[in-house]
Image 1 (tube, rainbow, N blue to C red):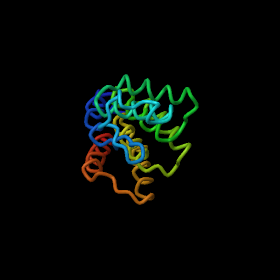
Image 2: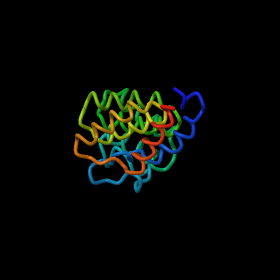
Image 3: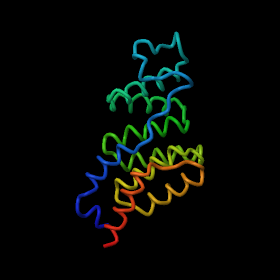
Image 4: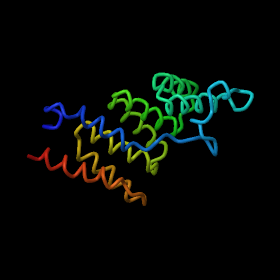
Length: 165
């Protein structure tokens, strides 16, 4: 694809991060307000501890630490769509777009109607310059009753036109 050949995917990645749907909190707990030392087995289940710590780390820019927490959950058999989605967001922030896409796809295997994941897949495919797949996930997002960011749609339209030239 011309988009990738021109090296514009790096610009696409930086722009695309703005359009990612934020990670999911746990219930009514806002993980970015909890400090890791407050997230203990005394207050939460063992699995919740890793999930909340992962969310805290990701919300506070500690992406490597977040990845470790989410991977621990998966290693423990806690394979829920939210874990895969949040791990995908963490990978995306590190520029690991292919890994992010794989985690988003795993989240959709568990919950095909997870609208935020369709949004994030559209963003990830945009970052890779695969506009057809980005549009596919935008259409699914709309079929699920959600509206994509209008600025992202405009950016996707313009990029799709450039790619066709």
